[in-house]
Length: 273
Image 1: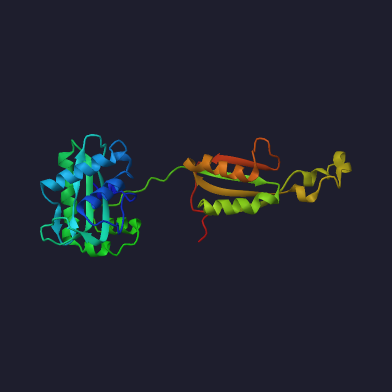
Image 2 (image 1 turned 135 degrees about the vertical axis):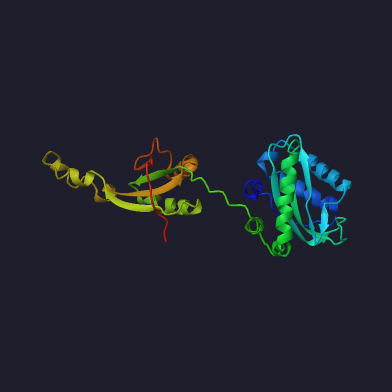
């Protein structure tokens, strides 16, 4: 089983404050609830499962490390994550040293073979690297997550690119323009581009039939700006809601319009270099 597939960044935690075995196990159980596969497993149940395993014999194998692990009937998948505590916890380890790095493995009750295979894979990483000292320098869970996976011999799975949509916001009112750009920045929409354009009002007075409308069509009202951005399909509705918080209800509002277009093919990026 590929460690990339089961390691949870969200559940990792660095420098947790705990003084006893029970306190660190409760903290680990709390972190485990960040994992969707354990949504049906209660935090107390996770804690009791880990505690029961430790009472059978400590998983602290020396060098400031331990591999707490347990299996649960309601768990749907395996999950692995890392927890550190710089002060260390008396975990009844083989060498009697306090444990500072916990490699946590949780899984379904019927996955005995896979459970043993994963334990062996984690042990292999620990045995051939200096991962413990490096993990204790990690200041964020993301760093701990990346550090561990960088030491594995597993291949990082290719990420499946989420389908993109072309989100277009057409504005005839400058009032909203900079607020929308700020909103895009806050939401992490990268590479938006702006097209300056004109509405038909700028040209209609050149048609003889409408010549009398010269002066009626205010030049400022005939300029438009279109903001184009490639966004993940899953975020389209969320972004439109944010846009309408700025422009007002687009079903009733004049001077603004949103278009979402399917992209049959794209190559390259609009992100700034």
